[in-house]
Image 1 (cartoon, rainbow, N blue to C red):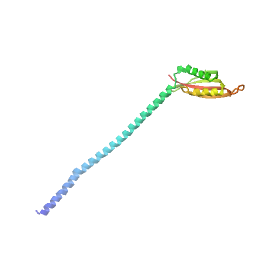
Image 2: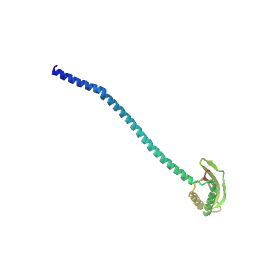
Image 3: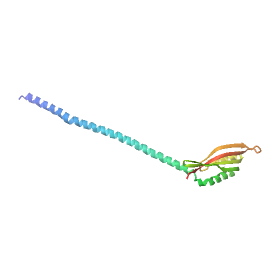
Image 4: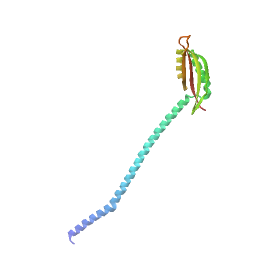
Length: 176
């Protein structure tokens, strides 16, 4: 055998071994590697989604806590129903302190809503307009939720600056 033939045979064997090793070793290894990279990418995407969801859940927990605090605050402004007489007494004291005369104070039918009771009070007061204005300002500063539903002012003709006020005040209580 000729040395050239041996060299050619040797080179052909090397090329054949290279082709066969690529075909049976490197190609399957590359395929397995690309599959693993795809799985890693998929799992990374899911992990990012879970992190985003966790952050959103944490934010929701903060919002829920804020809402619970707000509900507690407003519930603290709603006295129990048994304190309606204290509220009536406070309104009367405020009116007297401002120099207003209470003509009538009567309770109207209460309205029950989800979580609270609304107790409307029909009041008629007479006195100086400035005193009535001060009464409304003090009413606004009460440590409970109070709403003036209707208000009608009439001038008393025989006295300067005096008015007759006919109004409805709603006081809100906790429903028990």
